[in-house]
Length: 197
Image (cartoon, rainbow, N blue to C red; front, side, top):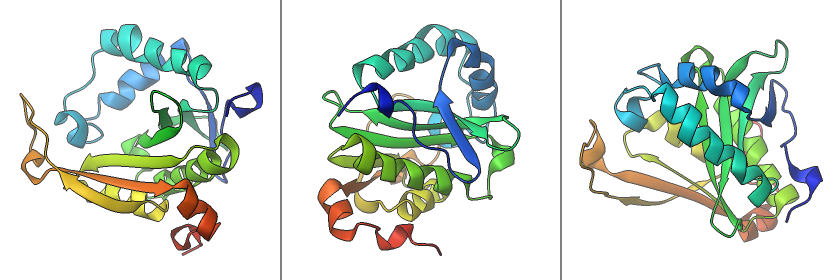
């Protein structure tokens, strides 16, 4: 793994991914200010500007050098260049596994963009970066996100319960984990879930 040629996943039909920069602070704050976008993440509570600018974004930018080819990328409309949100392959401590993630503006929902970007990242993770596992988690009640995970080729692994000091509605139903391992990707080459539907 590694190398300068593995810094950005390839574009899809409708999306172009690029590294985040400090210039993305306002767009990220705006994304996190939508209560529906944050519903299953923080119970609809926005992420403060200072948190994005001083904590989250510097941490994400530092990952690019530690784990080339993995991290979080701004998702842009390929036709207009508009900021739509982000996609992620957040690395494990050793960079051998990656957590699939996505957060898109509500105006993009229902167009299949989360699935399109996630499928591209799963392929990229195994074929270009060479991770051993891609996994994702969400609240059990987040049916929309669970459908994206399944359509991206990940399979349900388990439901588990965490203790929260400030639980949000739906927490009582637990969290779910989905995954796809390198050997499964290799065995199937193109998993059935990734074939055109």
